[in-house]
Image (cartoon, rainbow, N blue to C red; front, side, top):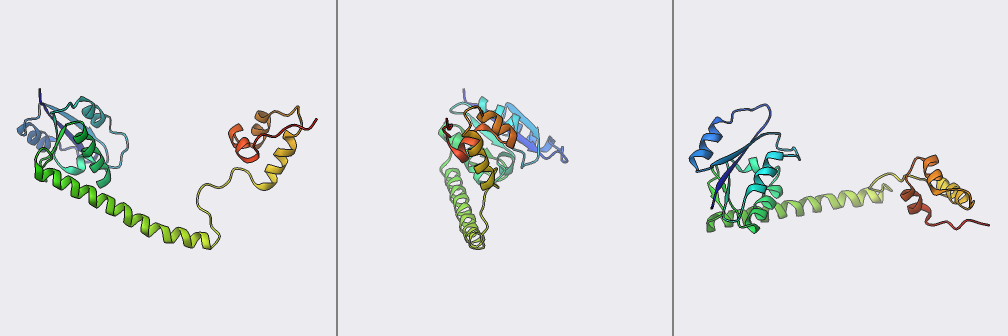
Length: 189
């Protein structure tokens, strides 16, 4: 049984769902999942529930494209996932329907644009990182232990009565961090 299932997302400060709800009902949606979250919110439980309900042959219907994805790449990934499951996608406002050839072309153009954008970001970021490295700045997290602390830890662990857990506690790091910096130290007898 092919179903048309709707999903609505509005921002918390804009609670006007009536127009969207009526449009989805008019589009033949029997079930409509509604959520009030900002578009940047990573957790969207109603969307996740909606996606779990969809089966091959069903269609997910939204009022606008930005209801479904936080970004262009997020939208493309979601629509591609639906397509792999045999689920159609429709956006009422943009008049995109992936069950038809034209809608599939639009989604593929979106995918190409998302990849192009990622490529541009990489190209713009790499010269900045190279310039920072040339100035002696390393990216990433600040090391948990400095060279002096590593030498002290190695000295402590050379004592057969000293436990790695005790040393880790003393320096405020995990045992894994100790092993990462000093490896396995064989106690001196």
